[in-house]
Image 1 (cartoon, rainbow, N blue to C red):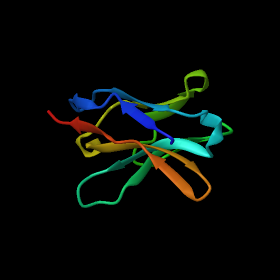
Image 2: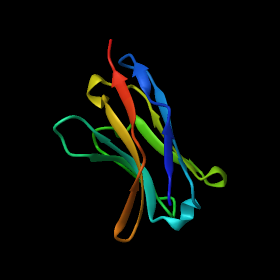
Image 3: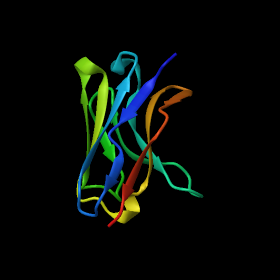
Image 4: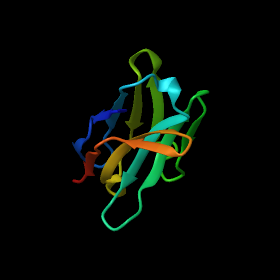
Length: 115
C-alpha cells in the first residue's frame, strides 16, 4: 500500500514562507509524477505543482514565481517551497503520486496565511 506522508503546514503571515514535505513509501521513480494539490471549502482540488519522473516540473500560474517544487531522490521525498505567501494560498495541501489510471493521496496538511 502506497503511503504519502505530508508535513510542514501551519500558520504564517502574508509574505512569509513555508516548506511542505511529502515522503513517499515507495521508490519515487515508480510514479509518473509526484506533486501537490490544494483545496478550499466548496472548491475543486487544484494542481499547485508537480514533478515528473524525468524531472520536468509544472507550476500553476497562480503560484508561479513564488512556489517551487523539488525532490530528494534518495529520500523519496518531494518538497514544495512556498514564498511570498498570500491569504488566498490558504488551503489544505495534498500530496499526490500517480501512475496510469491510479492516484494516491496523502492525508492533507493545512496551510493558513493570515495577519
